[in-house]
Every structure is written in structure tokens, then in C-alpha cells.
Image 1 (tube, one colour):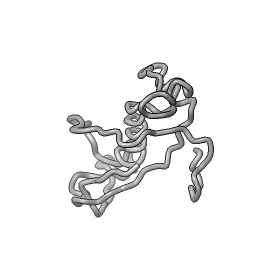
Image 2 (cartoon, rainbow, N blue to C red):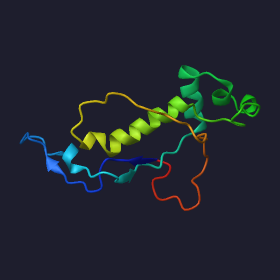
Image 3 (tube, rainbow, N blue to C red):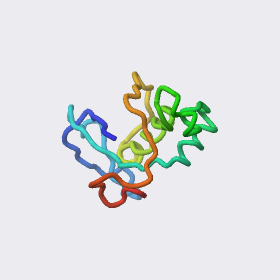
Length: 131
């Protein structure tokens, strides 16, 4: 996943607490226009179906045969599932290393392509693809 950040150059600073050695990023450490990539993240059929069963029980997220006759043409993750996955990648890759106090909200979410399950890594995938 790709995230455009409000910065190009990241400086890391230690937290004010002497007992906490985790580096932190602050707003002024970001330069407009920088970008970061987080992932990849393998999404399994089981994850797609489990999330859908609990939170978005529509045919295109629950059943491969039923999904073929939908707009998506096959089993795909719920858009809300992809938001949750993105959030996890963002927290692990940035937020847990930044001085953050929450967020006021999201202005826009668009689902441009379906997220499908994969049983094997794509050609050229690096180490850790399936972790």
C-alpha cells in the first residue's frame, strides 16, 4: 500500500522520557510530498470470508460461486476490510513511531480495485510476502 505523507525527509527524535528509548517523529519532521510504502500484506480467502461473515455479509465477500455473478466477478475483500488492513500497516509502519494524538477523521475513501485472496506470492515478491 502506498501512503503520501506530508514530508520528504524524516528526522527521528528520542521521546522526552529518559526511560523510553523509542524514537518518535513529530509534525516538523515531515516535508510536503514525501511518500512511504508499507506491506505487502497477503490476504487469505479465510480472512476475507471471516471478516465478511461478521461485518459485511454480502455474497461477493462470502461465497466464491455467488460472487461470480456480482459486480466484482469473484470473491473479494470487503472495502471496510481493506480499510482495517491499511490501518494496521499504517500503525505498524508509521503511527507507532510518531507522536500522534488520534485523527479528526477521513475525508474520502475510494475502492478502485477489488482485493482478492492469493494462494501464492506474485512473481518477484520479496522475502516475507507470506508472513
